[in-house]
Image: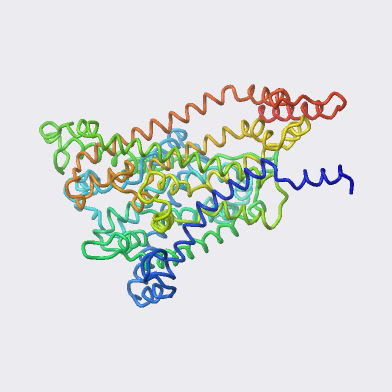
Length: 629
């Protein structure tokens, strides 16, 4: 073989910068997802406590034997968790579907306002919502129970009953399925329903025979993801479940590792519990994948024939608006009012105008703003949320681009599935798995209890950024990279200078979403944080929990919750405003990036070739088309 041939083959087999970047991104995601789960599985089969670094550790199935020997407890936890998560999932889906249907497919007034009000609870941190509902439902001073006492029958809601917990969990989770159902309904062609109506079918028959069969794969996927989200939620079980005595999985896991005085944490048994429920969520994730695998067969958008129809409510407008008003009162107005009332009163008292005039004070807000730990925990929250969102978005975007531009093989499909799998890991399992991992490696890498550990743990939701980056990459035609390659740039330079600016709006929008999720996160730091590294959500829980001894100050906790909510709201919408400002000049910048690509890369097109100018013009034209869309 000639020297030229050998050189060409070497160049083809030599790893490129883009391939190295993709491998590094894949390794980061592997470390975030696989290592903690592997440590948890090892802990379940090796113990009885930590699996490594302990002389008495040995391989056995003792933890699973112990788990099965406690049959009554095992089935009680399984049944309570199924009822709690399943019931709240069904209720939240029904409410979300109804709200989405009203805002997308009806002529209800103020539809845009309704869509904004439904999303507002997403901004409120989950621990704040749990605290607000606890205050709102207090038997003596709760504002909702006060309103219900005005009705005939002297109805009072027990905040610690199991059914109340299910309803509260459903109300706190409505926004997530709503945001996923809205685009599904928007994309469905209403002519199918019109045809059924013309054929004589009633609206209930049309819904049952046409609408739901068309939407079934998407709704099943939303149901599975909502179920997994509810399974990993610790806030409602922690604040309500300890009083009701129900053994919900998240609370059970928390109890096993939060040993009381004179007790040892049962890490091995907790790991066995985690493995059982990890199998359950894996099965649910497989169901989700199978449900959405052939969803395109039910696609109803067919080009020029697509026309979404609007259902006229007629006499039902007033009842529908009253129901939505009640929903907004229960999810936003009354909870925030309960927090405000708790913050301005020195002790729990029922609302009255006499109490408003004589008992209210605003010292709790001044105490919170003057508390150095509040500002320290707020700073840690911003660092943890920002750092984790950045790690997840950067690694996911690079890997998504590499997989989307690779030839589809069994290996790339496996990597794609693995990078998308964090949605199948409930937050409570992820938090416990990360806790075990940092405990095991702490003698070598002392990360346990540090801010760095929380940043790493928060990044486990990497699949959110991966799926968004993968979809955005598929929407960019390869002429753009081809123009850069013909101009002499490497694949990595083409990605950095051409593709990355085009992906930036999507990545930044996902970054904002993950940042807000990070600021609201409570379940992960509940397992990992120490007094030196705790974010604001954990510090706020210490203020509202009577078990916190000297830190317990419910009025300051309520004031802190309101301040925290306003800060998250301001930061979230402030970032969205910046995105909208960037969108104003995005069209001209895209065209400028493509047309100036060869000069920016420092590699002008060779004079003897005519393909490069043609390719650049095609790429520029493609960007102009995307801009017009």
